[in-house]
Amino acid sequence: VLRVDPDRMRADFDALAAIGRTGAGGVSRPTFGDAHLAARAWFLERAAAAGLETRIDSAGNHSAVLRSTRADAATLVLGSHLDSVPDGGRFDGALGVVAALEALRTAKDARLGLPVGLEAIDFTDEEGTLVGLLGSEALAGALRLEALARPRGGRDALLAGLARAGLVEERIADARREPGSLAGYLELHIEQGPVLERERVDVGVVTGIVGSRSFRLEFIGVAQHAGTTPMGVRRDAGLGAAAFIIAARALALRDHPDCVVTVGSVTLEPGAFNVVPGRARLALEFRSPDAARLAALEGELLELAGHEAEAYGLDLEIVLVGRWEPAPLDPTVRAAIGRAAQELGLSTLELASGAGHDAQALAGVTRAGMIFVPSTGGVSHQPAEHTEWSDCVNGANVLLGAALELAR
Ligand code: HGY
Ligand code: MN
Ligand code: MN
Image 1 (cartoon, rainbow, N blue to C red):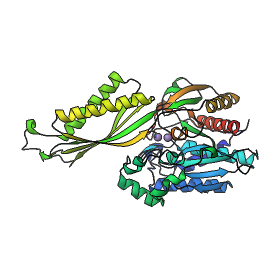
Image 2 (image 1 turned 180 degrees about the horizontal axis):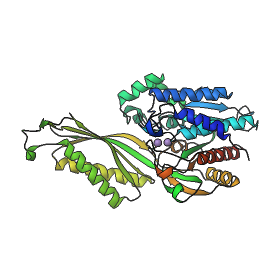
Image 3 (image 1 turned 90 degrees about the horizontal axis):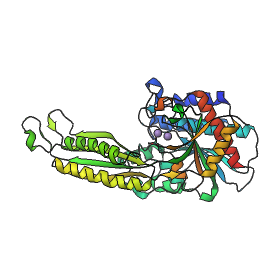
Image 4 (image 1 turned 120 degrees about the horizontal axis):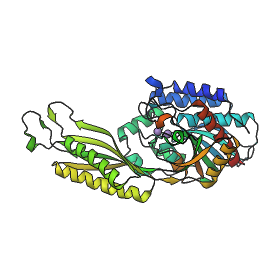
């Protein structure tokens, strides 16, 4: 059984974790910020140092390529993302990219003469600081026009970011790959939940990925003097926001136990001690493994927002800014992952992903699968995110084994 070089991979992982490092072992690499651009450049340097071909497409996806001996061969893509949430952990995305690079190096050194090419890819803006699944949906030809017209991070941030990265908005869609050119997609990722650790299982074989929708809500009242405006006549946007957040949670708990609802950001304007807030801007996101349930939850949440606005004498503006469909993952890929883990003497468990991933974009155009490794305490999207190094090596070896089976 071919295995990765754990020390070589560890050296890469630690070097990458130093790029955009924050306190307590985290990283902050929002899309197209200095740290993110530095991490992507580092990745290409390491690929070139390994004698691999490097490539950047018009969506900014960064790739290392190990060509097949056959001329018209399809490509098996392995990868994840180097961008992070603000003040995130050093494993989310990064582990998958480093393991993919290590898998290509190991395959290259072994001179396997595979019938397909292998590609290690770092997708642009997976986390949605700007758009969400931007690079993977572009590559899959699944990028919706409104995703760029009304992006989750706002048009200004998107345009500024594209300029910093040297990308042209009108060319992003050119990153689309012919589905026939893809032999499949595999992604190693930390679980970001508590299941594998609780069940003491080495490797998760992911069955499907949750769908999610993001909305920007704006409750609009009247800014007023905080001292001279009696409580009974205020149109306080902060009250509408607070009432909605509490009621949205109650709705999910009562009627949608398999769904999650999050208001991750609330901004009150003008934002002063002595002004009754005239505006409240909310970042609303909700998820479900089932598309029909997602649509039902959308209707109920938006109706609820309207109800709370009315209750506090406010107007309400709603803008859809993100929409990722749920995706079942490919049975043959799941089987290959299971066999690779078995050959390595590793225990496996089938589980669904509550986190979104690039694999859900690729699943629409090629057979796609994901390998999870345990998250310590199920913690993620914050500096304490951690996975035991032995689990990271297990994941990389399963990625390599499954890739070689699918390649053949
Ligand atoms: O938000 C997510 O689920 C993923 O981490 N992008
Ligand atoms: Mn991720
Ligand atoms: Mn993430």
